[in-house]
Image 1 (cartoon, helix red, strand yellow):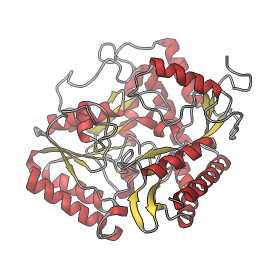
Image 2 (cartoon, rainbow, N blue to C red; image 1 turned 135 degrees about the horizontal axis):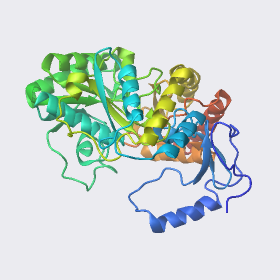
Image 3 (cartoon, rainbow, N blue to C red; image 1 turned 135 degrees about the vertical axis):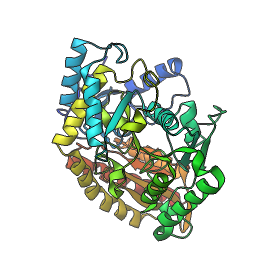
Length: 461
């Protein structure tokens, strides 16, 4: 039975405060965790075992009545806030009319309207087409199918530290072994990995990173893979699970130029970065990149499952009729949610709000780094921010254990944060774009407390 201090519903009307009434996790969450052990496959992971009853704005309320500050947004999904009024209303209206027909059997306007919105919003003023799917991995996999169909080529170029999904093909494209790839091979062939312009760890320094990394990638594609064999180069404009790595300046434009010169399709994986998260509607706009294809998901539909591939009309139209699709792709309720979420992103100018979050948070994170040499790097853009944690004392070796300890200290204090990175040593912050400024600052205060606690322990090692 849910206690009386737990709200009956979520949404932006929830009190935007942190409130802890039990330890984290509380007794009701622990009871549900015990049920989970007997019912849910072990391979489905978890970050923080608090069981959610309601959420809205920048808070998550668990079944024990604890109100936690949300710096995770369901991995950048609920950018417009959980249970946003417009999204809830649109979904309720749609499911009251019909829940499913399959767009490939008897179509409906919502799917068309979402595609029209994507064609309008994504970079470039060229003629575009879109197709809708269920998840980010599905979108990436279909982008590869489309690229191969359009070019008649097989090879796909991806990057160090990349994360593109958990299907067989997208696992081949994903870099990190544990926990994603280990034991699940063999993977799809004709996927080739090349270096990323990783400023913090580039051997000759940040100032040379973009130029030198691009030159090395181009050399590898020309000489070892064969540019004429490559259908697509797929890259996250800011890497997500790989550690929120912002490529060195000039890296993306030089690769886009090379792709255009050699007939390779440049595919921007904007599944985590898209829909205002980084301060522009799409992250590739920061350096003026106009991709041939762009994949989207996460923030597209306010928490409902939806994904898309959008691109140049002649490329998107290359596959044969019936070659793209799926039973649930572009579900009518998800399309209604997407139209409402996109409307909120535009009407409330959440791109500007993301920039404001960055303006408030980055100085605090840099000050934190100045106090603690275990913070090797502060990076990100807009409301997609990260701290890379290292051994400290001049040792830049990744410190996964310390990162886990800081995350756990945040969780105990009622602050939801996520970790990331190939070595598990990156703390990532993804607050909802609608988070109140006082709540954002309160969360950063808790982050400071967590670092102070863990830095003392790290110094005694």
